[in-house]
Length: 271
View 1: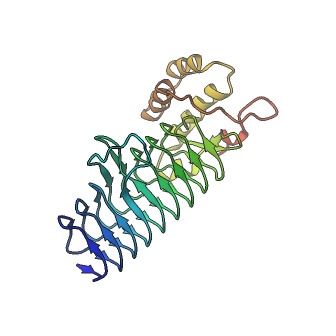
View 2: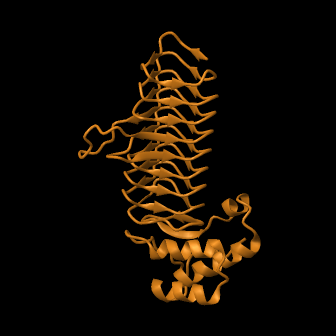
View 3: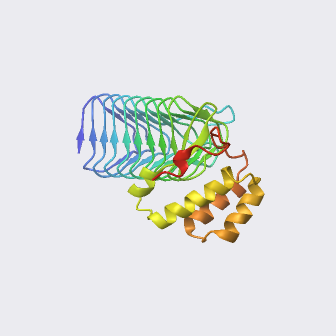
């Protein structure tokens, strides 16, 4: 263990012997830090927070401090972070409210000044660019990419493999496997690069395209489109995921970006 003498470690904190803690870092008494993790100078970790193995917390990052929620009454909550997570300078992750925890999955990458609010649930492999901001209770699927200065309203869901363009925002759910751009934000195509990197084969990619054509280009309403997807398209786990995502939305799902011919932008079709 390498702990700089200027670091402040609360009594009761559980820190693996392989952890490095840089000057002036502050670790609260209810924090657990697992093997191989590095804590940068002036970083603060508090609350009932667990940091996984081989994480890299950069200088000035803040994890597990009280949520920005007026209903919070100092309940014993925290953050649960997976393994191999990188949190860059001045990124913030707030603890949960009441009996809940904010959770960050394995292999996530949070760039400078990104913010994860109370009770958010972040899937494995998510990437947040500089200044990406989530309000409370947002659910982010695996391998989502959120570009810089994106603002996400509370309780929004972002489906797996979605990619959101920078300097945008949403009050509605983002469907899985999609590329989203425009202002207001809209589906402009499929995240084909992400799907290939995730080893989603061409047959499944093709059925995903067919499903989104029915949802966004057929002229059917959402209920009719989902029924047609179940009737006409092979029910792979990915297709079932799309149908369930639309049926379970509480905030609504963003619309497609319509081209001059009335159809969704052509990138939904292009390999």
